[in-house]
Image (cartoon, rainbow, N blue to C red; front, side, top):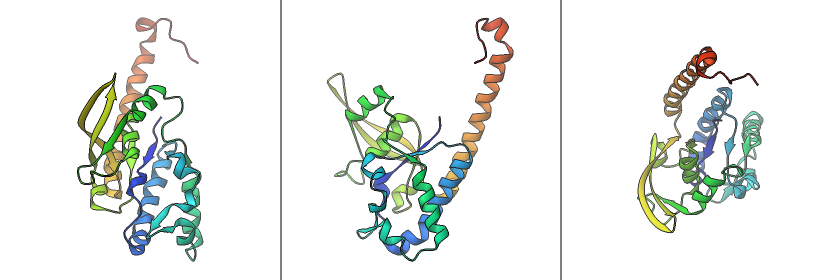
Amino acid sequence: MEFLILNEESIPFKTISDANHKFPSFLKIVNEAFSYRFKTIRVSERLGNNWFEMQVCNEIPIREWLKGKDKEFERKIKSFISKTDIPLIPRDSIEIINRFDNSDFYLSEKPNQLFPSIGAAYFLKQLCISFDSEEIWRNKTIRAIKNEIIDENYSEELVDINNVALYETWQEYLLHIEAQRKSNLRKGNVLWENRETEFKNLETV
């Protein structure tokens, strides 16, 4: 299943003007993702239970920022929120949860801050969606430092996380995603066509 991971550490914006200008582009990416069969956007329980308290800019929560906004824009925000899911990592992904709990993710540009959202995207192998609040989030991939305890041994390595904050980047990813889907479909069709010789016990469900 394909879904997005919200990079919660990419907000707040630096100014209200930035938020007003760039939030619509974020919503455009989200809406297209859902129209192209992405199932949901996963967020942490901390955010998912307090959406309208999320700081958009300068300690201004969404509930305050939306006052006076166009009703259609407000509707799009609420629609986006309704399509998010918690927790950040699905509860049935036990092995991934264990690895996530035993790891920390840092950025060399921000060594004193943890970035659990991009860590979740890395372990789940899903696309991370960021707000265009800083130059660093405009990168197609985010290079992070992963610290992890594995079998009581400490490891540190550089990892890359697929990321989108710009609409142009989303279009690039979408082309790749659609090509991969077609490839998987062709493989599935070949598998089914050869079921009688290669997989004699394969049946329809």
